Image 1 (tube, helix red, strand yellow):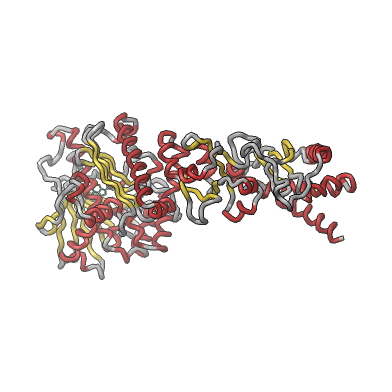
Image 2: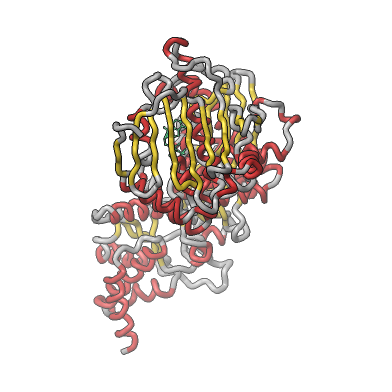
Length: 625
Ligand SMILES: Nc1ncnc2c1ncn2[C@@H]1O[C@H](COP(=O)(O)OP(=O)(O)OP(=O)(O)O)[C@@H](O)[C@H]1O
């Protein structure tokens, strides 16, 4: 150390991260070698990128080969990883190795702590990064010199609370990370151990990794090789490398095109969906290459956001090598590649489903939510995505969703629309009033049981030329014969006569004028006394409920638009109500309000249950005498 040594505190989040790394993740220590090699490879990629856009005179140490060297010293119990990459200036050291680069680092920390608690093997996918060095290191020294040739510096810390930075002369370009190993970590100074870790995690690093003079990896771009030459094992190894995964992928797509664009893509669908497991929104997992040179890691531009669950590599020779990351955002060529690959991937899923529907359903269960997100956020792929949607229906088995194409095959010849209804689960839907007429007429009804589903179907609008219509729509018609059961059904009650029905409707309109927009005689109810339907042509009850819940969370008063009430003139309660209006109007009002509330509950729209409970007790009290 020279006199110019300065001491610095780690940022609060960094301290927390170090604490997790040192105290909770020690069972996964091997990871630190992978993380440091991956940082070295990133630094080399960055240097290579700079070297493409600068002349040799502008580059410090331009002649030094691009590689990663690992040296071990058993006597000193020490492991050193050196790269000839872009290096860091003093400011870079302070900014990068004192703070956490992640945006939303607090959320990240909570998720990481949770992952450490649940299953430490998940942490690889979070990328703990440089700080993982402290899993095995008692002291970590980083000597670095930037590609701009400014003086080098040394950063030193024992990971507890502070670090020092001092000038360090005579360094080459790049970074040297010296890990002075803890007691119990002696193996990381032994060749057999380090070699096995590198072979397991880092065989696809695109720069030579030299361990004590011996090159361990064959630098290769797997995706650029022909499919027939690649073994399944190689694919799996590569997947583990790009996805930081420990298991095998669920699906794999490797394809290349020459026209209209030269693209080579190797994409994987993982087995698990960390996002639905509660680990927050995933960042994209596909890296963009041009002529086998990394242009954009975890690229946000090369695929639409809803395909963020994919891992892998996309390589296109058509992109300019020196394109900057900012320029990728609105580059027309990138947009074109995005379209070609997204369509190709969706076609792949369609083919997979044709080959093996059961296997596709596994995918659908885990990742279907992203395809639904695609429907609601990306108009472009609606037709393709429509074919990939799966829902349970009145004719599917419970737990086995079916495609819209299956639905079409079973449609009645004169049926013009595809129908769906939302509910919390199959039982609730089947016990509700909306399904009655569909059951009677043997018309298949799709059950939308996820909150997002009605939005998805509403965005889809139609499938194969048939409109998608919610069964809670007011002016729904299932064909000519809309009358409830009559002669054919022996148990059927005689309906109210027209005059009595008309009077009851007028009375209900007046009595419930604060609650409903319209009251009418139902053409679709079979057994239930009443149901709520939507005069709104776009929103379904489920959509309104979600919007209302959103408002409620923001502290705003949720408002549900007025609905229509349909009553069933053959239902005994409704027929009795018509008489009760004349005998005991006060009580009739209570019953009418309760019928309305019950129908609202069945529509999933009950907002103030307390008022209803009070009324319910009054009715029970009266009945009990
Ligand atoms: N060998 C290195 N050469 C140059 N810069 C480095 C090197 N190692 C780390 N850095 C710098 O330090 C930053 C922080 O590294 P760290 O590993 O903590 O996070 P990251 O690599 O950005 O993210 P992650 O590891 O989660 O992908 C890096 O972004 C990089 O700028």
